[in-house]
Image (tube, rainbow, N blue to C red; front, side, top):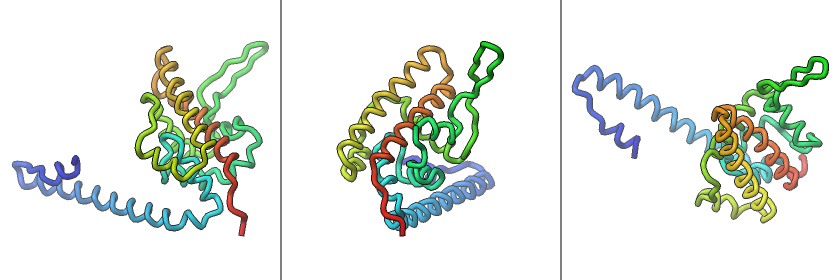
Length: 202
């Protein structure tokens, strides 16, 4: 609806209309390019040994197809992390620590590891600022995964939606709260990935 409204928008000055149309067409071209790339991914991913994991983690709120592919492409085999905290540290979403004598202070996140995966994870975490709900889109994703995975994804919603509300209620800035949610979301990613067998390596 918004794109249709933009296509019908008319400026009084012709030069303004030309500039607007150039920008609008550039956006449309980029959206079409993204659609082509996503379609190519959808055709390629089923042959990937991590395809079952990509499918399973889409049961999580905020983790749609391109997010799932991006995360697994960057992280790789999650079974190499023996504990979810190792994955959190690899993603750079754990607090930095400054110790002196007997005191221990926690600072901002370390931002170690893969910056792209961290960015994608934090973007996904923003979806938990809303109340827990299984949308129609998520219901469709659930049709392709096991009940234990669905149950774990719902546990994640209950936990993380509540976590965001509690942190902001305590006065935490939303940008800080969402990083805390992203850290725990990484744990749920790890858990669901460990529940999901991958295809044998060729």
